[in-house]
Image 1 (cartoon, rainbow, N blue to C red):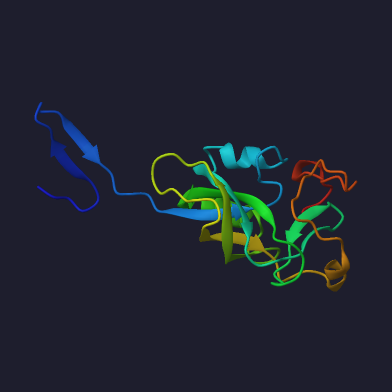
Image 2: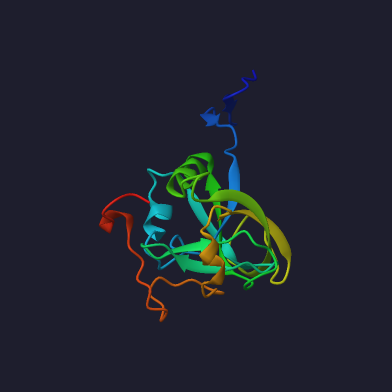
Length: 181
């Protein structure tokens, strides 16, 4: 008997197992506070937000300005291809629940926009499933912005963001902000 959303299978031992439909996963490239070791990484691990699995490290094929801006020293990837650096970051596979959380967290569409970006794989850590070789190309979604202040284009651009780096611009967590962004 076939049921579209859930099917029952009877094994040779007479046990009944449920086969659930496959979960849609989306690949996301993160370059800022959501990376491992950064202030918002815990949000990627929180099961209440959904599922996120680390796949590997990559860098953008096109150059982009990665700047630290605003009163809270937030990292922004300005959607200006050809300027800046080949930005380094991490690739995650996220479920629909996590994707919806990230869209809210990144204030889509006002602060950031989720767009596809071409990446060069630096290191692939995901075991099982698809593997990628260093140097190979791939695409993932990234949260970049076209809604930046004009003076942000003149700010120092970074290849790799670290909230604790020597740039002297301390990231202010959402919990520590006087008002929302």
